Length: 64
Image (cartoon, rainbow, N blue to C red; front, side):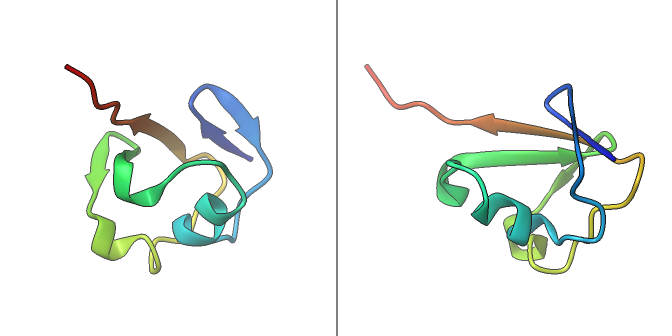
């Protein structure tokens, strides 16, 4: 199980990119942290989620 934004998700074995495709997140407008480290967007396809990972996903909101 992976903890994503505080929720336990059964996503072990998926890449970060594969997981994001199952969500409403727009990859161009988010930042992802894995186990306390920022994940560069260029690595979303290669990062494989593992049991025990803690993922935080933050969406950017525009406004003025």
